[in-house]
Length: 440
Image (cartoon, rainbow, N blue to C red; front, side, top):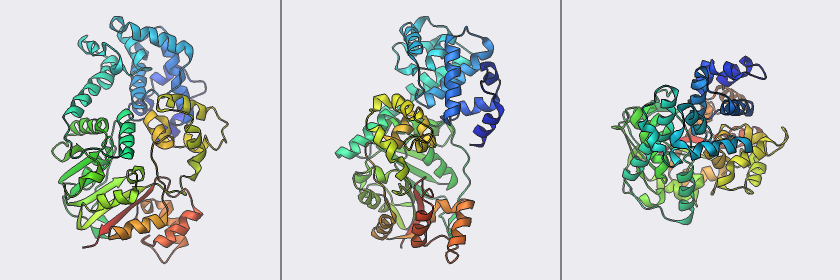
């Protein structure tokens, strides 16, 4: 977020494309994760259009490469006008005859790997900026497809809800990321030491960033990470190979509700942003928690009903759109008045800036929202001792909570947290994320 603020202070309005091409911070952002907020997306959408209709310049080729990589990361979520669409379709129809510059222009608008004959581009021996685009949009995609075909399957995916959720994440793996980021070692929770070199289970690992960071931060001996979506798992495996962690992380397709006791038990079990997408979150919690050893640690992440109240107008609007029209839905949100209740929370979320993230945020096929009574039930049913919310590690939250509830300096009183959320409804917008320990 600080990098975006710096860019906002640096760029004049309007900004010349040549200035963008010389900005190293922008280059890093474009090649790391979907960019935000709206002003930056609009600036880069305008730059993309300018590059499409301009004569090629060697000095601008790196910028075109960065934008093509960015558009792959955001799954081509940006708006385009009819003039752009016509030229892009002409380029796509003559793929084999395109120059490297034209291929990069096309990659800014369409996923190359989905175009007939795209693989032949890998054999042209091109170097320079186009090389990174071909690797990102074709070679890496083909590697993931091969990985997906070879992944182990631990269970079938059963039940209409699980299959619907699987279908969503096969089409739109979430989240899209390129760099895992830093992760500090974690050796204790609420003063209780974590096992050294633990075995770890990640329930619903998505595209692997969670599994990778957990393995590093917990110094895990081995991590088993499962998900419904083979497409997501393939992305996770490819990134794990890049980081040299394949000897410590195993990925497999599985339906949590069908695992039973076929794996585990584990020293640490984690499931963030998964249980609320099941038909019954409490059944899912039981399936996950039974995989923890007696005395083992559990980390869960669940949607807060109060914290997500502000998303209701956007989700209501989203019901008028389909998975194929997410781009149009995003533009409908962006074009609303700045104070519109459907627009404000959407554009304020980083998830909004990629197709998969927008769908996950506002158009999910299955979603439950929970409250503190639900958390108490989940802890009781699974014989768990509450060890605190991750939010308590944030300095502002810790300071304000302790000022309001000085009797609870460790932040372990759920009744006090319930009162705190009522006073500060945004506290758990990143979910109720908490640690617990299974009683011995």
